Length: 412
Ligand code: ARG
Image 1 (tube, rainbow, N blue to C red):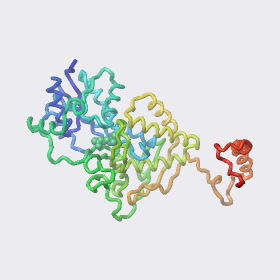
Image 2: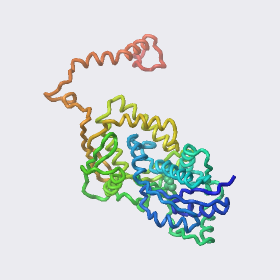
Image 3: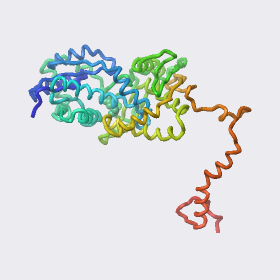
Image 4: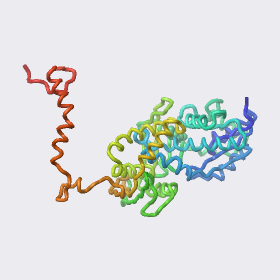
């Protein structure tokens, strides 16, 4: 059954602009466009108007910047989010938010389907569709670029034939996705993993090799979330926005990664995430000061799993939800201040303090104020090493060559 109304995730670019008329012609449905402002820094009023000019019956703009920061970036930061230890997941984090708004508008307008402009080779198709499936399993999903032969050439021909107001000529060789958490670039010369990214790829970070004076920023945290910059309380979205400019001016946050996509492709991606990289360094450092050892060690594995789930499109899933509960609890008392020096493309933590610190000077010091009883250490070490000592004795007795632990006997 073809739906009479379709809600389309609209970016203002070539593919989703063409998708409006394409869907309308092929299904006879009315297309309602939804564009979300997640801090991509584009003129979204122009984008809203463009959707109508391309044939949408309604065009909605959602200012989702605070929602993105508070509901998506905040838990990500608590999870020290880094896929493959390096990518802060900027695109992966915005997709479930956009899916949530597509579903909301579909319900309000009685639409039977949602649509996106993703290709079949990327992660974003998975993230949109799996999220929609979790939130509204009854809705159909249309993916014209992937499923109905909407190639780039055909899209350009469609624009020319219909006279649509879509800029196709000055199109950049790169495929870009950007928001408050950073900017992703792929395609063009970047498809050669050996080729150094040309400087023109970077829009939010200055060349880190240009000599300049270092900057230092003081970041205040409460329960695992940043709440102030240089002592000024700020809402999270504003804080990230300011820090992007501040850290970007020192070339902080450039990431060049050969990435493992969920669909099995390795792809070369270049990211710029000045605020994310700075906040992640500060947050992780404050955890080292305030988390008890076993909790900290265990949390590393939770962090990694969380990032993989979100990368893989499972934002709305039972394991992810359960891990969120763990992360919220673990983040209690990750509060305090971190000094970060921004210089030459790096964000270096140079100091940290916390009212909830577990650092005990009188235990750590080697000076006269030492309260650590070194006499207890001998017995501790003996008992700690007892199992391995017993095991090594057995190995020696049995002469088991496979164990290979004991040093070999002197040559016969
Ligand atoms: N590879 C990243 C991810 O899957 C970024 C994808 C962004 N899309 C783009 N058109 N550049 O999260």
